[in-house]
Image (cartoon, rainbow, N blue to C red; front, side, top):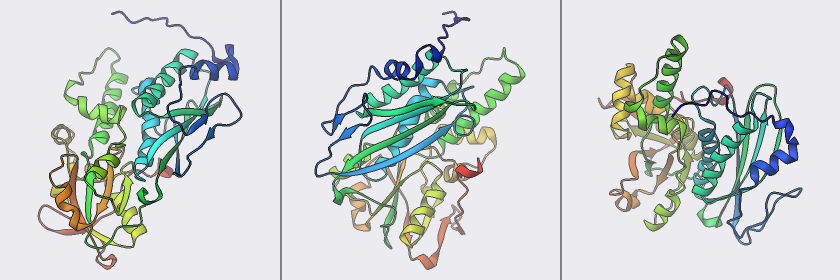
Length: 348
């Protein structure tokens, strides 16, 4: 299929702000009884009755959080929603509504914004959430996306970062490090393309890693999985900035230490292969890579038998007294202090 070299480009100014909002949001429908009023008025109206409301927000800035030279706009819209839903999942709550605000420069035609909102709509459908409002404005610096997500939970279901206790087990969902290595592959291919635009990358060997970077998924399934296993975490956080950083957050806020075992950290075979190809230490990346959007949590020791056979979970360590510090136990059985070397939003 030949690429259209002259795709249609409709200036956003042709619609105006309210016309743009109507155009981009016309396909959003309401799914939750708690949404009394969504888009179309000065504010949304929600009714959570006896549930507690959990709120989180995230900001994505072009050139800092994403690179449109290899991030398709539809994937970006999807990912922008997912990274917010992950925060609600990390509170052991159920996401229900989002607001979407964007700032765009005049280099983005209507068709580009349609692609972005197609991704947002796909995420809303996939995760069964309502899009209930937002804002649009102009930008001098490219594309900026801000999403606020609301969720619901019973008070006794909510899990914070500060509840880890001595002897608790440290558990992680999924595998780690793949999103970071997917980013390294994409950055390498970008540099090759800049040198030779006729060079077409062969990415078949990196499919899983690239998907983890461009189209991650939020682990909203974990809440139900744990409920069925009759396990309630004592603390929980999502792995957006890297395992080491997130584990240090839990230990600091819970006033505890921990031992994390290098050999227990779950990684994908494709991740190992690509780390070898790039001559990068796989443990360093698994600890510090970030953007995995898996959940890191602690559970009482007596709940080990309930989760030990579940393929979604891996026990990677245990909580200790604060005086013992936060440590990595290497494969050589050496104890070394764990440092936070993950993503820092203010050092980007």
